[in-house]
Length: 203
Image (tube, rainbow, N blue to C red; front, side):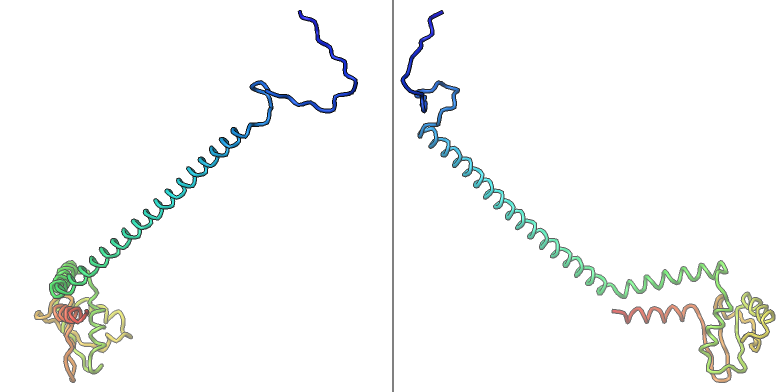
């Protein structure tokens, strides 16, 4: 082992400066290294700014496409609505006929099954009668017994003063109200005609 070199100094050492520090030591960076680090930082910042600009441009492009898609959908919806309105307007009469025909089939089925209240039909017809005196109600023979029975069971009702007569010319579920001042019909076909006329007037 070589001997340790000793130096005697006349005064204390006030400061020490290390030159040519070995790699791995905490020496101050050289000016060239500082410029290189700054350039690297500027390159990174430039890349970040470029990416931000690209993302903002892409976002605006997507917004534009979305706006155009919404406008296209609105235009399609408007055209479909116009087509629907035109179809309804051009085929209104056919639609009314179809609706009335469906109603006719439903009513006839209910009548054939006896699914109706003849008392309510008579009461509604009486409301349109020009007078409440000397009223004769013409009914189908199959409906007349039900009204006569109701009349007997409710002597205090408006039915008490009515006269019921069986008439084969009257269909089931229909009636004819005869009064000294006029006649009121409650016929299914006439009701359907009124419905058809009302629907034809609807725009």
